[in-house]
Image: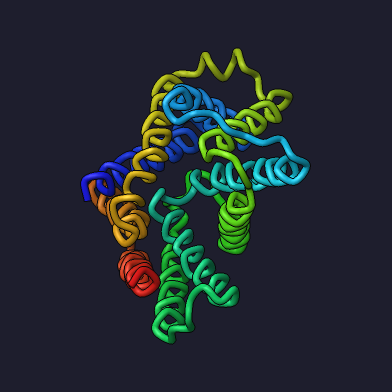
Length: 280
C-alpha cells in the first residue's frame, strides 16, 4: 500500500503539472509536447543507470517505437488543448473508459470472462461523463471549446492512450525505461521546428513546469514496485488518483454545478467498481 500511495501522489503532482503547463503557461500543443517529453526524457535518463538499458533494434521494434511516438504526440496535443478548458480530474474520468475498453479487449482475447456488472458500470461511467460535459459552463472555459469538439478531443485522447498501451505490449526484449526514453527523445525532436526554444525557456514559471516531471519519472518506478507488491492495489492506482484529483478540485473551489458534481461522483464510483470487478 505504501508504494501505491506514493505512486498516486507522484502521478497526481504530474497531472496538476500538466494542467499548469497547458493552462497557466498558455503553451501551444507543440510547446506542451516539447516541454513534457524533453523534461520526462531527462529524468528517465537519470534513472536508466539504475534500471539498466536494453533495446533490441529489430525492424518490428522500430515500427512499434515509431507508432508509440505517434500515439504519444496525439496524447500530448489533445491533452494540451483539453487542459486549457477542463480540470485534471476530468481528463482522468474520461480515461476511465480505457479501463473498460481494456476489459472488453481482453475478454474478446479470452483473457477474461464476460461479466454483466462490468457492462452495467461502464454505462454508469458513460452517464457520469455525459453529466460532466453537460455541466461544463462558459465561465469555466478560459480557452473556449464547443462541447462537440471537446468530446472529439477526449475520444482522440482516449484512443491515443489505449493504442499506446496496446503497442507497448508488443515490444519484445526491451526494458520499459529504455523504450520510454526513446519515445520521449523522438517526440521532443519532432517538436523543435515548431517551438522557439529561447522564448520558451525564458518564460516565467518554466522551472516549476520542468520540476513537475520529476514525480512522473519517479511514479514509473514506484508503479512497478506497486505491481510487484499487489496486483489488486496496483490496479487501484488510477481510481485513487481520480478521487484525489477530484478532492483537489474541490479544495481549489473550481467551478462545479450540481450536475457536474454528481457526474464526477458517479464516474469515481464506476471506475472503482469496474477496477475491483476486473481485478477480483
